[in-house]
Length: 177
Image (cartoon, rainbow, N blue to C red; front, side, top):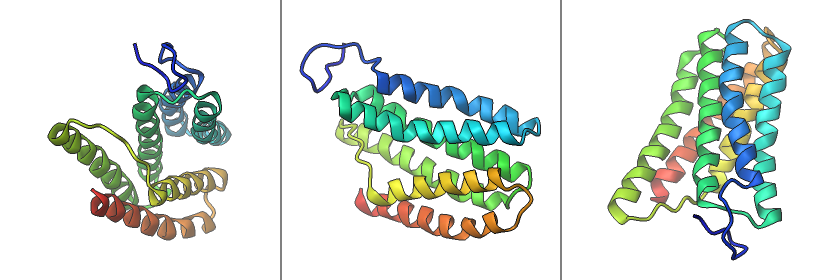
C-alpha cells in the first residue's frame, strides 16, 4: 500500500486519482463522438477532460495526496487524450496528419525516454518541465478551438505555434535527460 505525503497509510485511490481516471475514461467517449460526427458533445467532453487535468493536480496539492499512481497516470491521461484527439481530428481532415505525427512523436519520445531512464537507473521520477506544461496547454487550446469553430480557418493558425512549442518541448526533454 502506498503512503501519501500526509504520512499515514492511505489507499492510492485518492480524489485526484479518481479525477485522472475520469479523464482516461472520457477519451474513448470523445473519440467515438468525434467519429460519429458529433459537434457540441465532443467539445463539451474535451473541455471537461482538459479541466480535469487542472483539477486533479490542484486537488492532489490541496489535500496533500500526491501519489506515485497519480504521478504515473496524469501524464498518461494527458498523452492519451491529446494524441487521440489529434489523430481523430487529422483523420477527419481538420488539419494535416503530420500535425498528429509531431504531437505523437513528442509523447512517444518522452514515454520511451522515461522507460529507458527507469530501466538504467532504477528511478522512475517524473519531473514535469515548464515547456512540457506549455506544450500541453497550447495543444489543449488548439484542440478546443478546432472543436469550437469547425470549418473556420482561424483555428488552423494556432497549429504552427502549437507545433513549434511542441518541438521545443521535445528538445527540452531530450536535452534535459
